[in-house]
Length: 447
Image 1: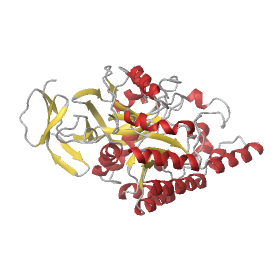
Image 2: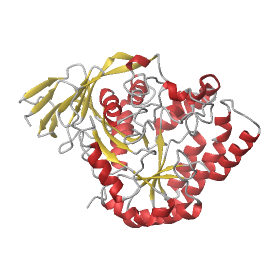
Image 3: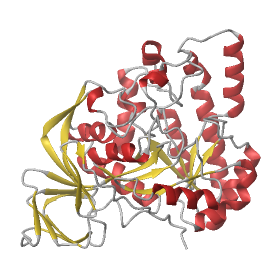
Image 4: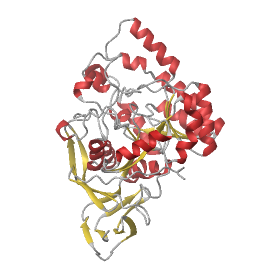
């Protein structure tokens, strides 16, 4: 690959910012310093911010599976257009549970991604003894449910303990969806027995108590086993504090943040119905609760940001009653604009935004130092941002197959001018290029 020089921009990392140029050779960063001589292809970044490509570690692309909801070419096009250059994907409809599942999916995805990608495996109760093999073959993490959801069986406390012991034994890592099986199943039984089909059932079914009870159990078992785990989509300050207490007690536990628990309100489901059906559901009830969540994001209670991108089309969301409609929201079109807006409007430092959505997730899941950084030796994945422009997200600008967004008609400060993967431009001005050059990234345990 020809040499590339990125000139005149302000380079932003989690540690600070400086006016500097990037020197790129063979798809990797060779130099970061001011006043580089222009060599090879020169990219003019004058007046722009230069950020590392974002790393989204919680993405569902339904591919292979119900690709009418989303597929890899379309979902990763949305990622590229919005500044995300690396994802970690797992689909519930076609889960990776065995070694041959992983090999089959890797073959299938060749030439289907705009961005680089890792793959996660699901933990099935009868396959706990095969996890080490998957880790050695390069999966990024193991997805665990503590309640049966999306057709994936939840692990009871005994199987959860066995899984965490196994994963700790070979040095793996987990992402855990925490909702208590007994609490959610009893709530579902009572609500259905009462004949409830109004949207408010989601709030009562997937309750705060169910999430917090499960987090408390998981935190205890993580500390006992020495496992490394992340709690997915932490939805309340109380849940974040439970995780903080576990961390203080020595647990290797992290708290994942998703925009929907900061930007959407609990009562929106009463108006929007299935278009706000995701789990855990939105919890914010007041301006003060929203500010408390943002304060926790700014001060480090949340380890990193992810989308939990799990789209359905508007037609699918309208199908059946609230029980039958699919869970999930599209997020790849909106997460980086939301986070960038928080930073450029002064609610969190810009450096913190870079840490949350690039550096920290790459580090947490063994993708660093190759991904999430602008430093010598890292892949030349970067995003050019115009901080003086703004971006209004409308449904017709949503690239995901969902074709809609809960943030439609919102205007965000900052605009992604262009996205680069390994030194090559993959999107400009909100439009992804046609090339599908994304590569599989083996996880930290790969032999």
